[in-house]
Amino acid sequence: MSLSIFDDMEEIKPFSEYPEEDRKKIFSWIKENLFVKDRINYNFSGYTIKQRLTSETGVYVRTEQFQEAMTEAGFKSVPRSDFLHGKDYFYNVRVVSI
Image 1 (cartoon, rainbow, N blue to C red):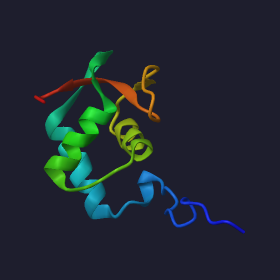
Image 2 (cartoon, rainbow, N blue to C red; image 1 turned 90 degrees about the vertical axis):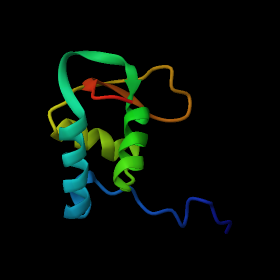
Image 3 (cartoon, one colour; image 1 turned 135 degrees about the vertical axis):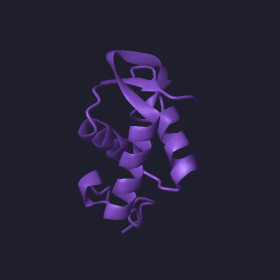
């Protein structure tokens, strides 16, 4: 039997199962840096926003978990159709500054 590089990979856990301290950091950062807009903002992808979140908080989240956090925080999303390396989304977000 051959081993896959994915055999040792940790299963992606839902954002709701993240440690409470990390969830608080993420929601605090979202509240301080992002605002809900009426329309989807195609200027900043979720990947870009997520990288800034990680850089400023030290908390890493995968795209799926970030989308869960954004939805829980009241944002809407649309899939990014031109993203070739996995999933990404655009959100109805106004970003303080990137």
